[in-house]
Amino acid sequence: MTIIYMLLTISLFVAIVFFALFVFSVKKGQYDDTYTPAVRMLFEDELVKEGKQPKNEGLKNKPSEKNEITNPDK
Image 1 (cartoon, rainbow, N blue to C red):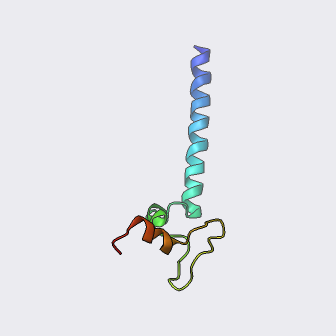
Image 2 (cartoon, helix red, strand yellow; image 1 turned 135 degrees about the horizontal axis):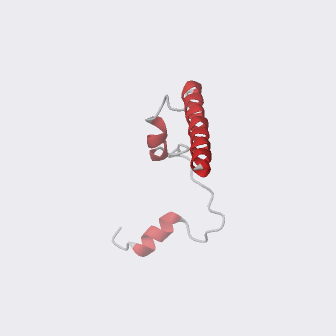
């Protein structure tokens, strides 16, 4: 019977600690914005400008030459 009292005491202590951490995180604003983190992965990190082409130093063929080879109709 002693072990049951001891386990109840430990489980109550753990539950109180987790509840206190939850209240602390709510007061710090952890759950204020729940929408933005869900859609943040849908946006690109950086914008690509159309006039600027990325450097392809490692590639031998340019992308335009590759299109001519793969698509002879154009």
